[in-house]
Image 1: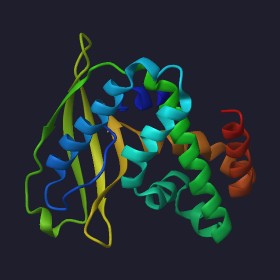
Image 2: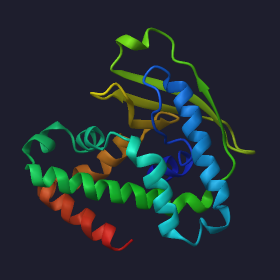
Image 3: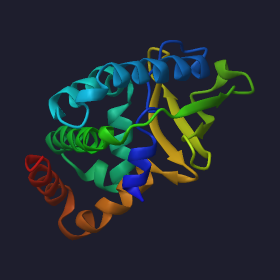
Image 4: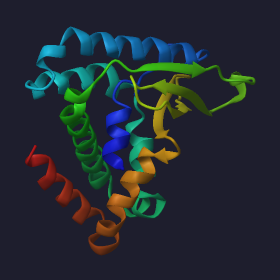
Amino acid sequence: MLKKIVLLSLVFFMSVVSANEPTVMLKKVSSDLVEQLNLNKDDLDSNHALVVSIIKKVLLPNVDKVYMSKSVVGPYYWRSASAEQRTEFISEFETMVTNNYARLFSSYSDQKSTFIPFRGDISKKTKIEIKSIVAASSKVDFKVYYKLLKDSEGNWMIYDFSIDGISMVESYKSQFEPVLSGSGMAGLISDMRRHNHKE
């Protein structure tokens, strides 16, 4: 299920250009990402470094990595971790997610997304959810919902998304929980490092 979430959301994981218009922002960044994919379409399945560079340039700078990392491991393990462990986890988690996306970029197809405008007074919100409907070529349409958090500078940052009700954060949390309960944050970081080293 996690692979499905990563695959279907490749072209919709995006950034922030306006604190007041997150829906407009989502459309713009989706368009920018599609443009990069199309420009490099012939190389997506053979040049891993190129795909990683696209992800780092277009996607990752606009994700709240700290909040997402805290959400993935849960408050208990995050509070009990040392500052060094938190930094190491964020780094390894970023690498893991980036590599998961990079491996699947070769499966990209020209998917179309329709975003539903946020209703209500957004100026009073610190967290919001933006909904969209995705048309995946000849496949059945599916729902993609994005959760955004306003940072200290007033920018909206992605911290989670879900496809047909399946949360990316919750999927990783389920994957990590057995390791955390058995060997703690140190064991999880060690496992992630070994996994990422194989990429």
